[in-house]
Length: 254
Ligand code: ADP
Ligand code: MG
Image 1 (tube, protein in one colour):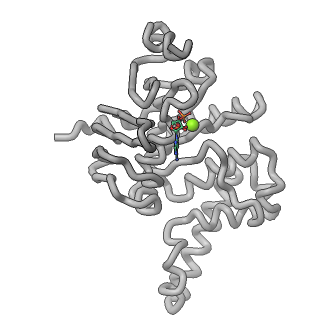
Image 2: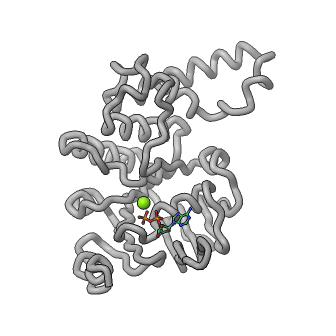
């Protein structure tokens, strides 16, 4: 049977664009309650793999299991409802909505259920209240509560990264996938993002994150997976993979 220590396991996941194979992953396992870093040169297929695993893109082949659920063919909102959420390399906060509105629309049951729920207005209002309270608590944790009524478009790049991470937590996920959460963020905010990732793990959330800065990877990762040219070419501790010849030559562009 499935290994309970593994929260996400993917087998033989492939994605081609025309004649080009972007992802060709024989096996990927993310361990429960750990921080796993996904590294690899630009174009290695990391973002495409995230898109596939979270239902934003469809593979040509492959199966993956998240916490007992087979997810191939499951759309993103259902993947999120099952407890796995992701952020994007380029943030997708809605610039014209306020920070708080961005949080509230990420709450479970926001799409499609509004009309249906309208007759049950007491239950509806109670849930709205709970969602707002959860949003405010998360904004406070990410030091954004003071900005809650400002349009998200007015935030700095780093604050958008924080908002995107906060927003992902609205569904109380058991696993988060963060695509370059630290890219373009100033050093002080980077440290605080690292702290947030560590506290996610401390809360029992499993984390898979893409990062290029090996110091950051060393600092917080329990496990590192290395991709190059669509494949997983190495895995182990940060120390192990940085001493691996295949990894070194992949970064040298061989
Ligand atoms: P990474 O995130 O590791 O930098 P990506 O997953 O973004 O890499 O891209 C992997 C490869 O797939 C790149 O060569 C990229 O150009 C290609 N690719 C990604 N998405 C598409 C697409 N929609 N159409 C064609 N090629 C794509
Ligand atoms: Mg990418």
